[in-house]
Length: 271
Length: 237
Image (cartoon, rainbow over all chains, first blue to last red; front, side, top):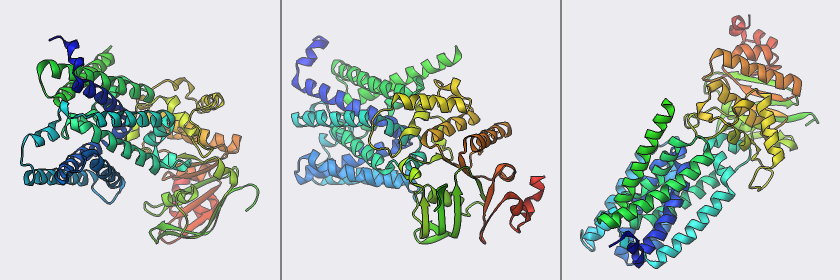
């Protein structure tokens, strides 16, 4: 079977559309998150979304409608914790992650039993994207792109220097909250396909890769978006050709891109 | 509040969650003033700056800020954070972000702002670095770039929070010279928190010492004669 034939399957088409859009959003949001040292929040949120998904399935509610508010609330909580001087923030995030994961596993074991469901939630499945998921991905992606373009300079200012932005009258909290909501949405949409354990790499890897190669914020943002989409497409194709899980394959592609970028940066430094 | 006054504090108490850090402070910052804020760690210097910037409402008393500070913004030079030192951004991107103030919801920079940004870089002698990456600059150059950004935000008042932290003595000296120039030649009012007493006593018109027992406000000469400042006399010589 040739590779082009893979696009004739409706489930692959859906995975491709939703995946490209989610990886684009994740990469754009990832740049400020990584630069603000909030990478752990992305990871924490993916664990929370796993717990929320398990509970939603047990209650018989549509997973997305349940997960989105829960994960958004968790995003606000984690932002608060990360910014609060009173908390040991990485410990707090680790505790929230582990608790959400444990809750999810407990709920699943009491309802459907530890079947392939858990495996799918943890490590993703290419079959997971429904038509509704695709429609929501398109909407979300449009929102993220619009906000990012319109508020690009403000996002830069708030990411670079919160104190200065506050002093010049920007509502820093609003931009942080906006980032948190959009990140939560991206993670909820992406985790079905990528898996709860792996989705946070979509947020973190492209930004890291781009930071090795570019020196301006604009360059890093654009490069992260392109890298992320390219890695997703490569990962999906390889996963189809070699019958490997899509989430892990995409992460492997991102890792390869990151290592290449590191190599490129070293070579450029030597020259 | 007079015409030339930028900020007037009347019997101001500042603090967090009802806990007073600073109390009963009277302070007047006029156009072209040079005020150095000195004092022990934890005495409330940064709290005072947050109050002057309008980020922390006073627990008691009032802080009047001139209308131009409310509509435009104050040029603020905060302490650098660790995350900033390796931030991927060009110098131009950093400086332009100084224009994002309260002037409303605009999404892009105008050509006038771009040329103003280049002018401010030139004023601080770092124009040739404009396409360089911020993280590749030396500490002194980074501080100049941040000062250029502060100049983009305001034309009459600069507020600086320990600007020479982490700079080598030569770079610190350069920074003080630049501040002096801006103050004398351009009539820029300067409020600076510093641990470095020498420039405070040499350049500043007024010294504000915040101690655990109270505050002292006066000229450098008065400060050296006061009980708070007496021990620093050797520094000044």
